[in-house]
Amino acid sequence: MLSKLLVLENTILEAIATGADLSTTFACLSEKIEMVLPMSRCSVLLVDPNGSVDGTRMSHLAEDYREAHCREVIAPILRSWVATGRRGSSIVPGDIPRLPESWGADAAALPELQSYWLAPICAASGSLLGAVALLRLDRRGPTDTEQRVLEACARLCAIALERHERAVERERRANVDALTLLDNRFAFNQMLSQLPCDAPGTWGLLIVDLDNLKVVNDTFGHHAGDCLLQAVAARTSAASSPEKVFRIGGDEFAIIVQSSDSLRDLDAFAGEILSALSDGVPCRGHMLVPEATIGGAVLSPGDQAAETVRRNADFALYHAKETGRGGFVRYWPGLETRITHRLSAIRDLSAALEENRIEPHYQPIVRLGTDQIVALEALARLRTRAGRIVAASQFREALSDGQLASALTERMLSLIAEDIRTWQDLEIPIDHVSINIAAADLYGGRLEEQLLDSFERRGVALGKLVLEISETIAPVRHHRLVPKRIAALRQSGLRVALDDFGGGASLTQLLTEPIDGLKLDRGLIERFCAEPEIGAVLEALLLVAGRLGIAVVAQGIETEEQASALSRLGFEHGQGYLFSQPLDRGAATSLLRNRADAVAGTLASAGARRVSR
Image (tube, rainbow, N blue to C red):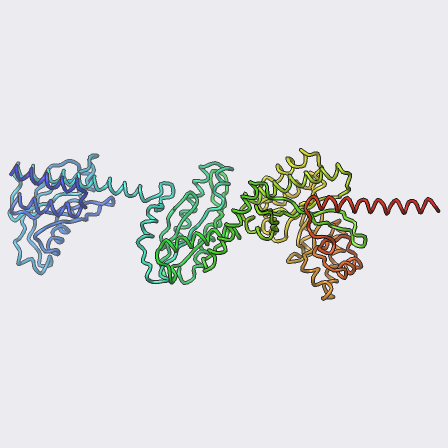
């Protein structure tokens, strides 16, 4: 029997070493032990952390028959062991009562089991994991040799269970994000690779990007960022149930959407997630507010692989972040082309900045009626390697990249300050130069530092610059930090103007905007001569702006008729192709000098006439 025991041990240890699953290992053990100990029917029972008994394995007995024995006889004993904290490895024999008829219709056709031997399966710590149960066809206790066999089997089961737990823990660590306890990128890739792609509309994917994690980490520390991530993970999981949520990056989460209700209205589903994230998260005395953006895609006809849906969701997220953070964008055909154009514009602008191929062109702002140049607007131009001049409208999409927009502003401010210094040295009078700044400059750029570096270093007063803020970035202006930043800029001597006014703004906005001037939207000027009611609007605007001390410039003037009508209405300053197209610095310098000389000559002639009288 000892040789048979050695064979049994080697067989089970080999199964454990080769990574056989528990079911296979225990079935093999049951079969071998019944060969070593005839008149026995073997079962392995496990105890879960809650004290429930599960995992019965027994050969040569009908399923309902063996389950009845384990449920009615063995399981109560194990539960009592758990309750009393039993430890140790001694064999516990006992008698089985006579079988009731209710234990199975086939019970009468089987030999009646009369006794049992139980060997506790204990972990290295001593805690009870389960038991090896031998149901005997005779009524007696084990011999010393039989007891050794049973105890050896219990030890083998403990080894198998502990190896299984280690394997489960390794798999858990490989598949679970330690911070949020969500499944990680590896688990996401595994699940994604197994999704079928033969039935369009049956599943979709959302990518959730946490927009303000870096700000939280930099401001409050990484412990606060971890707190925010844990809250976002918990809220996203709750709002997405029953969909599966993964953490796939530092600030990115993925949701595989498979339920018909969620797929039926993906926009509403994404909206519920954003709504769940909108409340503040208390963390060590701070209230952190998650800011997230979501991109999504659904399996569509023609999608040959799950990776296509993933790529489309990434495209949608990129577009959502570039066009308006805090919302949801669902992928649509053609979005990829649009993003490709944007990426191409970003690449071209980045190269132009590195190679110093960005230059300002200046369009004059004149006094209506005299055409005297009182100011200039600096417009960014990109010179290609072949020498062609590209207007800002052709690379405007690149300015959705905040870092690139800030770099362009920095380059333009440096060149403008240099040109103003040149004109001052040439004694060419110019009141100011205006420049349009991007949302990124107000929201998180280095604008103050760039201004000081460009203007103070060249000895040019900041009063010579007017910053124009486009009405199209109004949502950014309403960020709580932006009005403070504008106020600080004005206190330093800068003037701030609102560009493209009238496209959507109201007159009441002038009461809340901390500005010094505004430029009318060119669409109003185009309609002015054709629609008499526009004149009444413009007249009211001039009245309000005048009372508030806000200077007004009419831009987009292209005809003498427009210029004359605006002048009669009370406008003093205008800008447009009627007076001049944008000019490079050389042409602008010549124009300024000629106009200054002409004005000086006119004044000299007038003075001479007064003397002769």
